[in-house]
Length: 381
Image 1 (cartoon, rainbow, N blue to C red):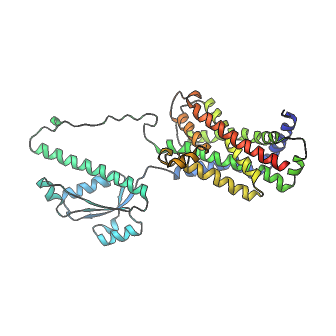
Image 2 (cartoon, one colour):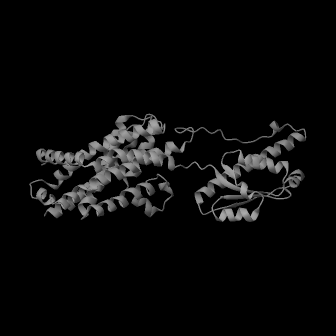
């Protein structure tokens, strides 16, 4: 049976230590805001202003129109220092001054007037694969649109009504993120990653700090059980964590204008489960580590990197190898990220709709807390 007097005593002791420790207060309230402010602007999947080298060997009105089509799109910036100079463009590509070189052939206009196919050479820097893939996609779309316009002009010049030609066009309607803003996708991911790191770091110092200060043995000599110790020490951090989630959520909505279409009860419920997972992981690291520095490093690598790489924040989990997907089941941020994106962007999302995420968070929480309790109990004996 749990003794609530002992739990309250541990709760009061831990709360007083948090208030007196300025470092903990900075980690809890200042660091999440600073991190979401910096990374909210830094992390984006919208790639623009790609530096591009241009070699226009045809130098005709059609070739200049094609170049204007590319530049006016807003995705590319011409590198003027090496315009029409292949050697200088290649040097700029090697020095990462530009990402793409476009070479328009001499017979560009002549072949178009003859109705022949034209090939435009595109040399792409593949060292940054994501930028290269997106840049090539932009060029393909812009080139296709330019070619279609030329075809329509040719048809009109022959006196043929272009409206009589059948064509297929998709009628696209985007739900939940109509503007396709990457910020609406990134901010929920940042909240889950930041809160995972902050919550785990807070409790990663609880047990090991008691051990370094010499008070751990005193606590273990009392009748307090490992379960009471964990509950008493985690409760203050759960309350602070819930306040922190509300704070960063409010900041994301007001500063980055991310819509919040869910309800606050669902957010608090899943935030409680997620924070419990993160605190349990931190408690486990603290019970294993011998020094505070060791606990911080263990928590950093077990909380931050998996939350970024294995949660679906940057890379889709479905695209990962099956063996890696198994490891992602133990990453709490994977489930909380799904919940946050649903709550932020979709209406009428309830707890019952996200029951799978809730069950996984409960299971992971139990796992971390039980293992931490076993380790503490073993050291007590």
